[in-house]
Image 1 (cartoon, rainbow, N blue to C red):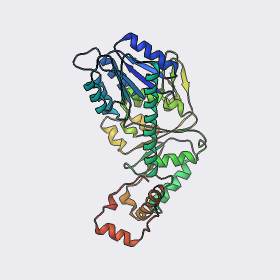
Image 2: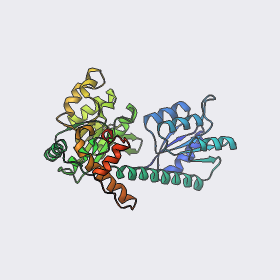
Image 3: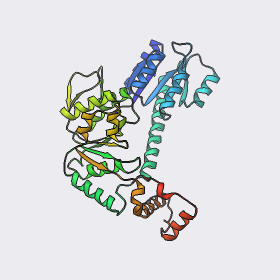
Length: 359
């Protein structure tokens, strides 16, 4: 997917010049010329990079306020501050607040592109580092031999052979994403994509863009439904999806068709949808937070993942697994897990029964 840049500047000539430079280098650019429009664009869809002028159209709010707002949403989004009137203090303050770089006007094309490319490289490295850390503490298999885990393994094997929608319920960290991934990997769609969208971190405007994509003049940005075509899509934390978006998801599940944002043409897809939740959706329905008709659409096959306290007999296997993974990643010899190890844990009152690892 093309890296997306939000350009915020109240000077039309500056926006035009910067836009043309970025467009020539295959970046997708959105623009905002006021504080209000900038905030609206950020809420609509958080970009991959922001180029932000310090002085805008308002006296009470400026680029520094927008920088703070962006960082409050996602501290990893790189922001390049630009200004033709700034002093050293403003430049230092913006860097302290998390700006990636500060660029004084007028600036040349090469300097701008150098900052932009370095910002994307840094952002990519951060994402890769987070992914590596996440993978270190996550398993590619269900660990344990308890009757509960054994039944879960049987369910995965059984339901991977179907194409029915699945609702996976369970506490945070109990392996809901892992279960959905294992089902996909054993299914007829295993050679196609497995995508995840998280309902807990996006607002209604984000969801429309993320799910359905966008058509903007001659630019087309594919959404998660389009990217998941012929594969599997997990809607994680489905309980946190806004009500207005729930209705749109319901229509896609019913018709396997949708329109991109600002789009005219209807897009057809063939997707297996799985959903996960750590909340009781029946309670959410009673409280008016979740659509009952959507619940019946996604709850064709219900699967529950257990609390760790309910599979205590699997704790030794889990500890052994994660000790091995952590040791291998750090070039260390794994320690031996035996009854004495657990005696020490209990002696120091380490509450292993209450830990909820990523299965």
